[in-house]
Image (cartoon, rainbow, N blue to C red; front, side):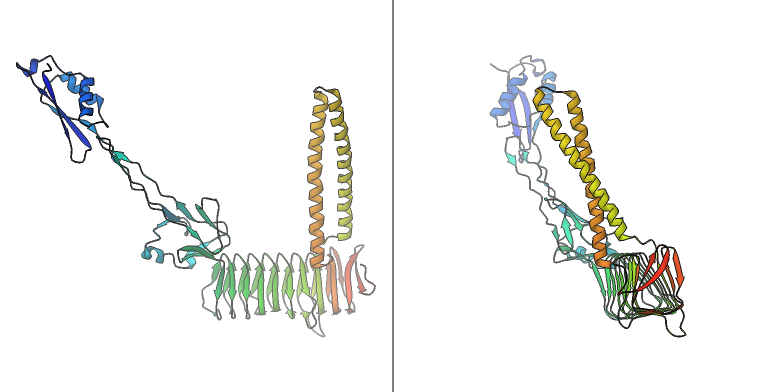
Length: 472
């Protein structure tokens, strides 16, 4: 008969189990040798309903002491780990990351549209962090404790935004502009609209997207835009710098302190005493007086009523004018530099294309012959295999070269269609004597007025020829 008894107690939460080994026989309890082993203890625990979280080390230490009456915890359940709620991390400020709860109205008010929330095209706007499920727990009696899963939040993209992956985790801007949240969705406004006039004393404008001014822009102001600048009224002595086009629907008149620079084209009604520089083309509808006009492509003033007085026009493709100069008015200068002779260049490109195509045809023929030779020998011939590889590599190189030449030719033809022939000054009405002409190193000051004329550099000399007899 066993001289011991087990007493098992389970806590009310069933997360802990306690064991007491009691002496059940006669004699001194401290000297009793009849003590249970580990297997007997575990069997009794399971009979008592304790099946999980049993601590073997604790039980073995108790058995080694061989002492009755001690109560120790021999089993412990596993607590559940709650899930984590998902959240959205906003990236609206340079150098800062905002973690905003979309359900919190006060937090959302921080994101109201302002100049501080300017972003560039491709910038990361928000990152969606999904919720975590958590881990279930279990009691010492084997009951599961279900973990509460984290709550999901949803990232919604609005105007001018896009997700970079199918999981809709990263939201980026498709334009440069100002970011805001409206009705729970992230939007980017790529245009800053300014109603009315910008008067002297107004703040300068620095915006990554487009800027549209519905009124006039007075002296002393600066407008910098990553995109297009559009002024519906007049502009005075102002500094305009655009990463796109500049459109001034009114006049650009001042005292020589105004400057317009554009990475694209510039269109303006009238320019007086100002500087205009475009990496594209410049179009002036009416008068250009005492102005510096520079274009990497074309300058277009060939409209009836337009006039150039005391100005310098410099382009790299072509120039079209209506009237240059006037009686007893300051003379002007028309410069064309770094022009390309399109016909010669096209002939050169076409020759290169023909040459590449012939080489490709020869290689294709040689490749077919080599393939046939390989198939007839019924065995792997290393020399032929290496030859085949060389032919395939040459074919790839020539194909890339041919595609490059075709792209250059197509681009050049498209530019000619858009801008007309390069190296030409087209005169719609007349250019008065005294006007300085420069085309690719050939210089001439007109000694007489020329009318309805095409001006070119022919064999290093400035040639003026009426359009009826001009070269095509």
